[in-house]
Length: 348
Image 1 (cartoon, rainbow, N blue to C red):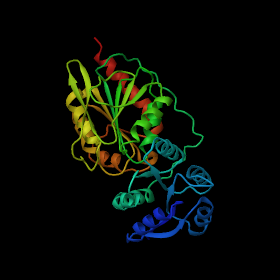
Image 2: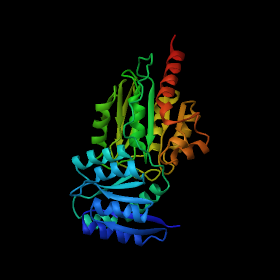
Image 3: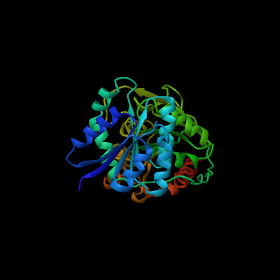
Image 4: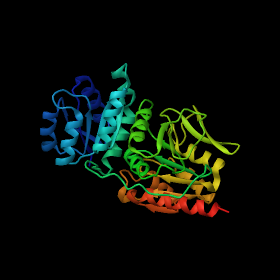
């Protein structure tokens, strides 16, 4: 059965481009193209789409309000169509909190040409959304902050995620205490969104969260997020760990790549590191997590039931790279328990 897709966008040009992209794919069926939320509501009830592409900025009722109502009344996988602006990034993050699966960022200039160039990206995100689990997080309570007896700079936590990862990472980091080991994160995200995401996390967490700028020393109680257009690595500098950003080719299909981060952690920190692989499409991070496992690091994968997309963790588990397979709501506590054991084992 083809994937039934509904396009919702107030721009006739974007509706036309997305409609042509969807109609060109043999495994997809365009069931409608709505110019506003009112028409979209009627089409959702009549056509029962498998996936909706939804513009954030619409007149009358904006995309966020429509999404909120949709997720309460008829939860459906949604791919947001966002803008590469600060306001657009904030709205996109809010849409992911409300239950959207993923997003596509419209270029600032040359929108028609840019959207056409995103053909493959758009159809991949639609396919991923059609196989995802719709997660509603509206009204969810904040995770319990876990305590840990730890002081020092030798332990590191490395986290990787993709589709569904913005909310998963947020839940894990919100459970970290202010004295948690330095944490480095690679989340598949385009440039322009990672800085907004880091600020959002920083406002919610007890630890300090920053977008990495390169060269900084890793400090306990801090988390560093890879920029959306750079690979992030961790290097040893004497007794310190420092961040190195590089602008190389994509690795495992991505830049930033989780495999690049995990591989560098394996070399610089060895068994002092903990590797965590959360929800996401594809296999990025699985090879790197296996490297960490082989260095006798503690390695964690999110379980299938709690993943929005059980891709990256699944591949890692199949490779035998996971010492622990856990639901998302148990992940933060388990990580801190492992830190506690590692710290106790290193005391004289």
